[in-house]
Image (spheres, rainbow, N blue to C red):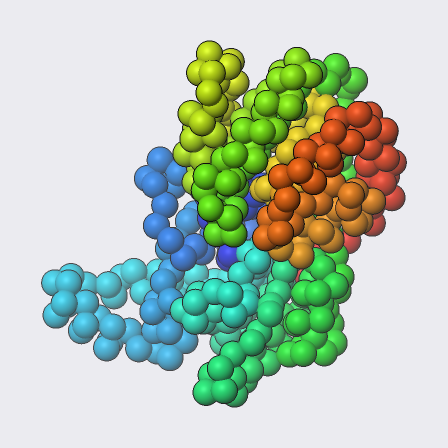
Length: 382
C-alpha cells in the first residue's frame, strides 16, 4: 500500500486540525488504497497520537539531514555514545516512509519565511528535497510564504536552497498576493493564487435556519507578541462590557490549546466575577467548529481558521490580526471595514467598529453567504 505523506501540521492547533481533516477526507476519496501518514516536527501527547486516525511520525531537523545525506551510521554512533541507545530501527522506518510514498502534501498554512528559525526553514525545505531524492511527487497546498530577507552572509546559501527546493513541487498555491510575490522570486512559474483550502476544498453544506442568539470571542495568544498582555486583556474585557450592555449572550472560544489560558485570564479580569461565571469557555474542534459558530450573530476573532469556519457559516467577524492573510481574507469577502491591525490598535476605533457590526450583522451575514456561492473550487491534489 503506497504512502501519502502530509507535512506541516500539528494536532494541538484546531486550524491545523481542520486542514488535516479536509485534506485527508479528499485523499481517502481519491486514493482509497493509500496509507496516509503525518510527519510532524514536534512530539505530541500520547492521547492525541492514540486518537489520531492515521499514522503519525515525529521527524526532527537532524533526522531529515541524516536521511538526505545518508548519515545513519554516524547518527547511530552519536546516539549510542551520548544517549546510550540505538536509533537504527527508527531511521529505517523513516526511510521506508519515503521509499514507499508516491505523494507528499505540505499544509503548513505558514511555515516558510525568514520569520522562522533557520532550523525550521531547513526542515521545511528538506521535506521537499527528500521528496525529490526519493522520487515522491509533491504539492504545497494554499499557504502564506515569505518574506525571505537574510543577512549578507546567509543570503547566497538560503537563496540557493529556496530555488532548489521550491522548483520541485508539481503544484504550489499561494494564499495572498504578497505571498505570491515572495515565492515567485524563487519559483517564477507554476504558482497558483488560491484561497484557504478549508474554505474552498468542499462547498459549504446548506445549513438549517437557526436563531442567532449569541456572540463569540476567539482570542489568540500570539496577540501578546504585538501588545502587552494587560492591554490585550483590556480590549477583550471592554468588548465583553459592550456586549453585556446589549444583553447579549457571550462565549469565549479557544481554537488552539495555547489560547485557553488567555481566555481564562480575560474572565478573571472582569470586575464582577458573577458575570464571568455566566460566560462559558469552550474548546472548538475541527468537527464542531461550524456548528458552534453557526448560531452566533458574529464573532470577535484573532484565530485565522475560526474566521474561516465562521465565514463558511455566514457568520461575520470583527478581526484583530497582524498578518497579511487576515486582511486578504476580509477583502475577498468585502469585510475589510472590520479588520483591526493589532500593531496599531486603538481602543476607541475598535469599539466603533464593534458598534457598526453589532447593528449590521444581519446584512453582513447575507453578504458573506452570497459571496460563498461564488467561490471557485480548485483541484489541489496530484
